[in-house]
Length: 303
Image 1 (tube, rainbow, N blue to C red):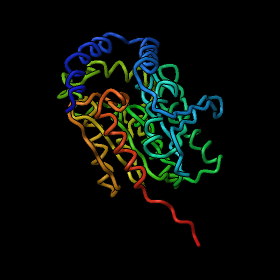
Image 2: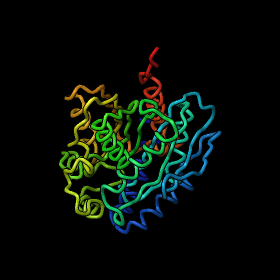
Image 3: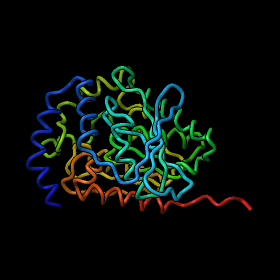
Image 4: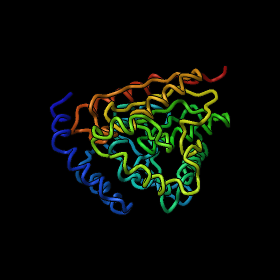
């Protein structure tokens, strides 16, 4: 464990839990995340952010350094379904682009509680179709996301697999895949998590789900079917309350024969990747993801 991570646990964790423990207004949470994106998250050298749109929603094309791969990354941002957007996650995605040689499409999606589940999933379907309309084949698109975005990406993967439109692969960082909150780590890691308390889970579910049952696969891809599933990489921390979301998602995918890989970090905060430039563990995890992306099988054109 790096000294930076030890310091974060000792100094930052109490302050962060104090904020997340009392703030419940989505607008306040959105402002906090936007402020962090502006003043804390770091931009890699050579990052390029080009504004675009799909349908009525905004998006960014993201790159950093030479684009060495014809494939594209479709990245779904996190934020608990209630916060975040392309502007809050563009620096993180740019670092992955720099390390992988990919170009990324980073779309916005409608947020809860104004637009509960499955609005975000529907918007990601539209983003997928937008890329298909630009000429990308399914096996040229790699899905990725963090936290709630990782959950949306997995829900999208399930539906795409059932439709026979299988992407090249998927990675998810600290994925949020179970709105029933039935994982044991919701309780066992309640005092260890750097940011969140499990006591807030029912409140979040009330904002996010609307009339959708918590075990609906569109909200909780842990319960989804993944026929002909491509390779999947999951990364999570042993200390976060969502640890068991990743553990059980990995087990679920392995049961059906998926080439699934689970990587766990000690004492890292939820989606520690966002702290690239501050935590060595963040650069390590992003780098591992980039190596995994570049190891994905490539479709060979028919002769």
